[in-house]
Image (cartoon, rainbow, N blue to C red; front, side, top):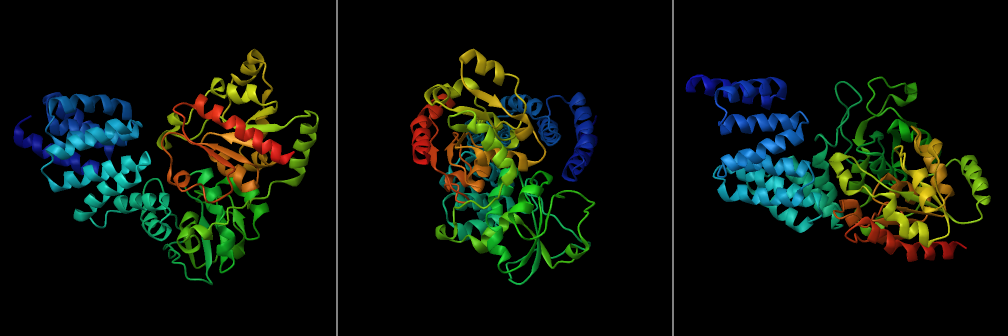
Length: 460
């Protein structure tokens, strides 16, 4: 391919990429690399498109080669830091980002590298360092929503609530925090004006929706609320609140009652913190969800046959995007607790595990799964089980928030990179104790044993 023709095709491929047509861009990049396999421009584009198509590990290894080929090319390091962040290699990502800044000559590359460095530091809980890079990016790009939203995380983690919620709002509409509309044309976004009829919709994961539900009653004192959440939460939330609740989040067809189809505005439910959680004192830190009393009684009847405390264990949590590989403990890690406290232990895993029964038998511990309560599409089942327990000990997962929300004593094991809610002390619900990261899960679990004993002694 002649140079002029190659540049023309490269420009077209970049246009496809900018418009989100990564398959067409990738196809052109593959052809471009066949003609010019040493082309840094084609490799950068190809790696970027592979990452967007979810082929992160392949893109990562290609990018390592690219950085060796073109160590003074800022776009290579920009791709590298992004991929390493996606693969939860944050120290590598920060190192790559700083290398990129040293060689960057274009202002747009400097801005994006500072954004990536800021976001990576936010991911690992380095709030002040994250703000430093984000503020540097903001000098050249003051309206960058990714910059403002990640700065919002930093301020929320530091409990600077007013500034945090305001900038967190800029994450609405980004990939991980979808902005929803229920009418055509779209209804206005609620701006905090009281006396409105508002659709508040769930966002992010189950745990986030539970946390943010702690603010709903305050909002309902001044407004009429219609709540749209994950189907998994519908029955639990309907019992817990007096306003209409639908589990139709993300569905185009919404079988709502006729009276609930008229409203003034809508908003992601977490954003009401901007109006109702402006100070530390505004967080009541009390239970707010109501488990099914009859199901709780059924569990309690079973527990009476055990004649010992009943302790729930949350073993794993998260998804790849939220660092699930950092929240993966194994049953062997829990032996200090399983052997150190005379109790019946209940697995709160939300995914099937084949090793639980075999592990319990081989180690002689009283541990059991109750899959009809945990491997279910209705979180009401899990809520009743958790409410019946004497204590929950868990790695970071939605069980943290469910336990606090229904009022079951919670001992929360932090992992190495706390999210903003953890850094702020999980203010949305009660927590009996935090266990700081001990370097591995076995150490953290061992530290929990005396605290579990204290919780059980207080309840006796």
